[in-house]
Length: 207
Image 1 (cartoon, rainbow, N blue to C red):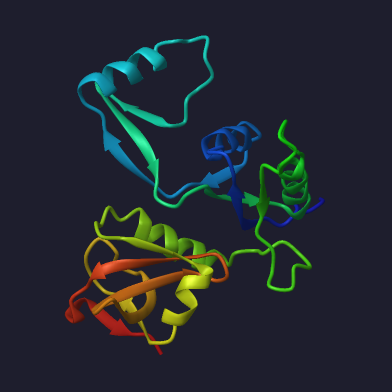
Image 2 (image 1 turned 120 degrees about the vertical axis):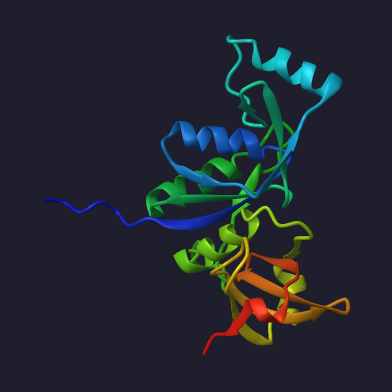
């Protein structure tokens, strides 16, 4: 029996506010994606406008909204134009080709992140992806995101694990950022998320 091709997490940078469009396209192809978002409950005119839009059965599914009973939530990206996809090497090469096809303005739609030497697409270790998602999806407030160029200077510090609370199990570095001691969880070469203050009694050193 032939083994299925290996899959890895990859990061896509998308231009022109196309992140939801690409998310929809990839999911239609049966691919798993992850988008760091905050769900905001809509009220008043915004709720009515969204309900009217979603009631149009002839329109494609609008991934910007989530419906829970009578409530409608808008999905607000926490990181501009960054989308993760779980794909094989063949699939990610096809996605990269799609992103590089020029628009009517003659510009690329985005790119797939590559390794530091630009020789291949950067695979994201499953553990790093898991830790990042754990923090982002915890519902904790005060999260701050850093691009690779910004967070490398913060990286050195004690490596710790959160032992309780909504981010229990998260591992990262404790660093002082603008006078606050915060937990920094990294996806190497791509993005990092810094939490708000976590009490020392909720942390343990990771050897």
